[in-house]
Image (cartoon, rainbow, N blue to C red; front, side, top):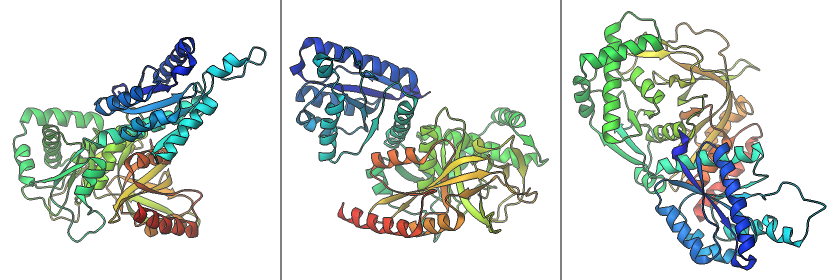
Length: 488
């Protein structure tokens, strides 16, 4: 699936070396590009060696204008004077990875001579290239290591997945059915600035447009989807009419999303005119299909869920909307119980979800159908984005998800329990100091490394809460960040 995302492999050199050396440079670079294409999930396309300012500028313009190009990987096989790169790199709008490697892994001790040294000059060719990247203040990733090593390839793949997020952001359309929940601050934000910075087009639509599609669902469509439900889920309710309502919502919402070219959507229980239930099962199913979702009008979380879904394609861990709901504060066993009223994606389910119908207790509507399950155990991250007024801030909390300590037979929603790193007190205090929201995008597939690469590409402030977090140092980091971003 990820082969539709294309990355260019560009090698730098210069005419000084002569035709024979340049032929060898091209041959070696093609071999490295082919190995990357074989080992990595995205398509890597070798490009002819660039040897002059005009060639470099033309290539960067072509990369900008190619709608399939997600990023550029550069490597200096020989020495490539970096003044040649200035004009090209200044106009390059695609993410860049600087691969610092060399064709040969080992020094050929008995045969090494000056011809070998002149050809294999990445040790200082890449330093020249690195200088101009730093001088131009470029946001780029540097990966150092032998090109056949698994760790080198893994780090390139992390960058690729982040670049996919940046690529997809440019065309992301988010539909808001209803406004933000009244009087809530953290789900608000500057939608114009988000479109300028990230490319997200965030617009509101009347709930009546969705209701028309619900009313138009046919019996044949409904029966076909209900048959799927019986195969996919453990049916634990006899209230089939309530389940039918959510099935209609799912069919209608999928049409609405596909007709409008939307990648993410929001709803709110304060705007349900014409609906008998709050969308629950339907929102869960749309997320499982790859769409982003945010409750109560939270378009920032909806965008993150969608982008993380795309970044983690072909991975099995799962990504979902999440909310820090309640705590377990037993000494030595402190943990967070995450959930939401209805809308947690079953991609993170540990086992087969149960399809149930229960009262909601908020919103004043009929009892909604929803999938009930416990989330799987494993390493994960919870990520939120907030609007700080002069910039957006992404906050990452590394967590250890686990099986709940005990069963919760009277809590009929999807739920996940986790321990935040480094510990409950430090993690929650740091989250609150950073201004973190109660909604997050939780993913088992992506890591802090993915978030660092994505944040650099999108010019986002990033703060991380992990095993090494200390509150005093964390508060200083926030203070320094305020100063830095005011200067920027």
